[in-house]
Length: 99
Image (cartoon, rainbow, N blue to C red; front, side):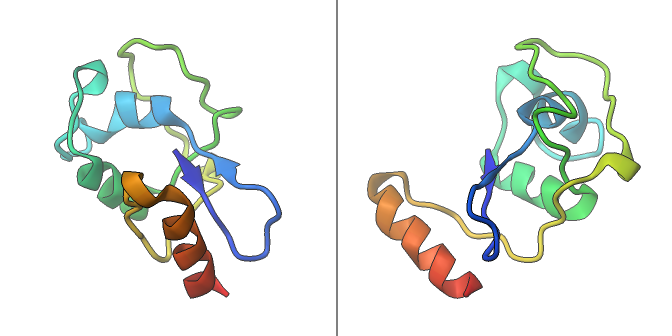
């Protein structure tokens, strides 16, 4: 999962493990390593914010939520879905909207 910000040269790599550990406990329809709904993840990120992979490393297993509000790196202001079939054009469209 990445975040794209208009004034950054590189994307921010967000903590997938935070979603695995925390989103379902917060009432979103995600089920840790067993899967879930991508839209629920976006709503979770929008409400709580996201830490980076460096702050909340990926462990590839379900764990206790270690989310820390003061460590939030990313607060969503706009959520856009990217069509997997047109990744490049979707990214260009999102960047244009942010500019």
